[in-house]
Amino acid sequence: MQSAAQHAAPLRAAISLRTGSARDIDVLVELDSDSSVLFEQAGLWLAFHAEHEVAVAERNRWLRCLAAGTVLIAVNSAGEDVGFAAVGLRDGEPYLDQLSVRVTSMRQGIGTQLLYGAINMAERMGGRALWLTTYRHLAWNRPYYERHGFEVVPPAECAPELGCELQFERRLLPAPEQRVVMRRRFAVDAV
Image (cartoon, rainbow, N blue to C red; front, top):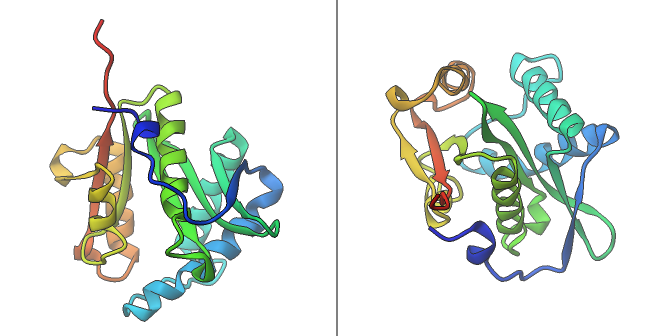
């Protein structure tokens, strides 16, 4: 299997990636809120008030990622933050906690650049794979990730923390039966 850098798609938007810091938490929340409009158009309401269990858990995960230096923020040529990818850990393996792109910046290759930035980061973290959870029935979710080398993993094959993440999401998010776990395995150099 080739490295993420060898698979990176050409960019269509002129952006740069910067590493987020704790002061960026409100930027992440705002970017994610903006991108959730796409889900609303598909009939999935993911806008939770700040005290809701999902919103609190997301914010805490993103704060941990920011503290660890594992958040990439996409910045356009005007200096505006237009998307982010946050990489955390589940069961000691890299996990894509979130990938969000501002609606007005979608379909320009920004999400793909963030995804490959997250893949590269996960490889540098020493992971054997990058894991994520997503919706299987939305074209910009499961099929998108499959085009980039991810595969669906049955819940029975997930380690405990990842299984708990999936259960949490299925308990609190709309369309729980559509939530799936996916992974993109990394090439292991021959010893």
